[in-house]
Image (tube, rainbow, N blue to C red; front, side, top):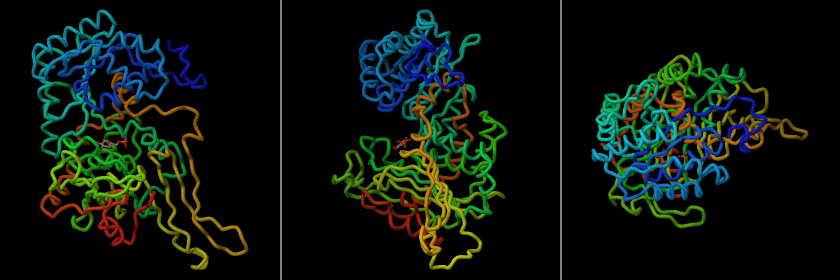
Length: 507
Ligand code: BG6
């Protein structure tokens, strides 16, 4: 299957990373994540020849389904969301390994059936007892599911075989609940067998932060307080909360994406060079950076939260957050959050990191902008440099993946006018290889037991230590400011930067 795979680029000389005999059990298999991300990712991995021939997928949920019904659901999800072309022979081989176990998480009988199903798959498909359990369920069910796995002898492999737990966010809603969750999971699984998903780490452009910084010579010498004025990390979405009221209300933008995705981006941007790309070296450096994060003293001045009001987006009139279905009309949940942080170490002392995330903003864009100081001296006339801004290096995480460098250049003509220009690297232009979807990469890593793209529980807890005081402050002080949907967020966020003599980028 591997050598004849038409999807593999024959110029790719690297050895393919193919998972060994294994299977995956998904709890919460009827949810959106499973349908839109996990099922298509599994098919795409199989289609790229990266799964073993006997790979098996077990769905577990409270539905009155047979294996065939489950197979049909996966089929529909694959047809709708997979990134690679549908190939009947790949589908057939994969679908032979689909099983469905109906039941509630507290149902002992269902876990007995799950155990029998795994044993049957080991015999029929050669999965070798190697199974990952994906908990795509709300955290309140974690204790029940992991304890059931333990009780039914499913949490530890026999002999050389492995069992792993894959956990979706949210990893709690504050430090205390995160610690409790970690305790529950670690009572059953060894720390090295627990994989926490932060899908941003599965994105090519996020992994490229490390390549950009540590595989090159030209960036690292200026990546510090001597040259950098500030860093802006933006995660803007144009969508609202869609059908996720139940999850989102009471959680909000900061807990939903700053605690995890944005603080991971900060850690990768700010950390020192790791000794290697191994999980333990990476965690050590990310954790050091997160531990050095310092909150501003006046949280009221240096943090802002907002909530989207009705407006226009893509030519359509859209509801405000408080009018969304399932949302408490008095909700104080933030759909926008902006935070100023500093990193208290020799490299970054005095350099602010501004983080912002929001829904229903001007457009969907995630980027990290490293904005440099102005030249210490300019031999040019002030009038000639009016259109010269600060140099910047922008890592465009999505959707227009690449890197932009902004610098000043002489405007052609007879005077010495200088204006900002950009130099762009675009993935699509420089590479013919296609990027795997984040979940593809991460699922493959789980099956291979490679943990470098998964945050450890210490990082999760440290991130809550950063966010908790901010959430507590917000809880006590007023309401989020309303901002019109389709704009760039609350006015207070612009004022927050203006007070520092800076402004947000309009990506
Ligand atoms: C998830 C958040 O982690 O990331 C969502 O829970 C958000 O609210 C999503 O929409 C965005 O992911 P991406 O990959 O589209 O940037």
